[in-house]
Length: 323
Ligand SMILES: NC(=O)c1ccc[n+]([C@@H]2O[C@H](COP(=O)([O-])OP(=O)(O)OC[C@H]3O[C@@H](n4cnc5c(N)ncnc54)[C@H](OP(=O)(O)O)[C@@H]3O)[C@@H](O)[C@H]2O)c1
Image (cartoon, rainbow, N blue to C red; front, top):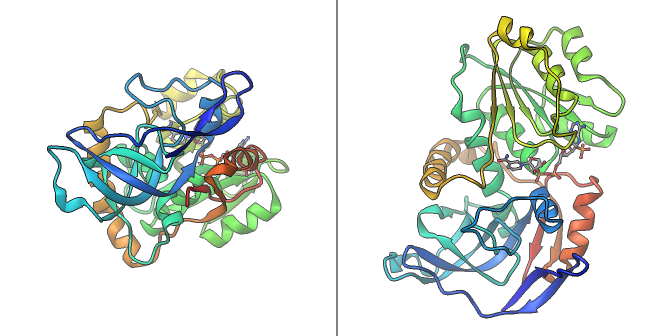
């Protein structure tokens, strides 16, 4: 089968021919129809992402496709089923193995591209926003940085669907229009506006911040949070170090949580899968969630897909298709 590997000498993405993997007893073999490209893949390729020791070193953590084989202790009724799922690497290929308990059905009417854009975003939001207990549960307000990113689009759609007030930041006026069209209540262009000033000026009271920037944003995030607010950090695109005023944390009784989905144990991921299926099913029926596909590339064009992601010009997910 065809698989994309990182050339160790120049870090270029190259197409290789390898054996089709064999599913372990609790796994299935999926014929990959589409694979989501994530910013983490860019970091992993450069050697800056510590992948769990049990993961495949091949890029690609989310796919949609069809189950074509099952492991010895896995229900053979899964063969032929269209599925989407998180995988422990290996998605940039024609075939990949996945844990059977991690499989999710493809929502009705979705394309294979949309289905591949769903698992990483849905399970990241399940692992962050839905793991905290809010002091005020009625229509909370959340600030989601990067509202037009792969993760951000899902967060905006799902949380609006659940009744949250959603504020977001984006890097251009075009993306601002897109974020408003997604349903955001307030969109801030981080290149021309100061999110802290604007949120304070408009008197928004923020209960949760979902942050993928860190660096200079950490103190500003704390400053816009309400008493008992939650700051959830999932990445540090703005820098790995922040100086914060601890007195502000104490006086506002703020909780800071930093999480990564990839490093969770399978049992924890399976719980997220089941919780996400329960939470999102109604939202699918009401058409509140529909992944946005920025662009699609063939598997052989993986290098171009990474260039597109690196440019920050996309909205939603970039997808690779082996066939
Ligand atoms: N910890 C976890 O479990 C976890 C899971 C999934 C993803 N992540 C991380 O979450 C981030 C998003 O992932 P993705 O795959 O959705 O990536 P992506 O589509 O490439 O999105 C990156 C986003 O970051 C935004 N951004 C960059 N600098 C910013 C700034 N200074 N202020 C506000 N927004 C800024 C970009 O905004 P513009 O494009 O508008 O400039 C873009 O929306 C990545 O850093 C990824 O590694 C973490």
